[in-house]
Length: 90
Image (tube, rainbow, N blue to C red):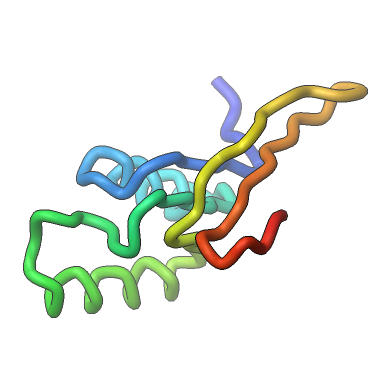
């Protein structure tokens, strides 16, 4: 009944991208974390790149080649720890 202020979506398949776009357009700050190097891995690269550019303009942040290491709650806040293939943690 209440729109989340911030939302993290794990994965880059079609349903995940649809949810990301819908929530972003409704006003949530959306971040998409993808294990691979592309969203919609079964689609044409040129189409995917154009779509991703449009999604970024909608305010969606993408973290590609990123794996979730931990998820936890602490003092009524939720945290997601991730690591990029380069070794950077955030």
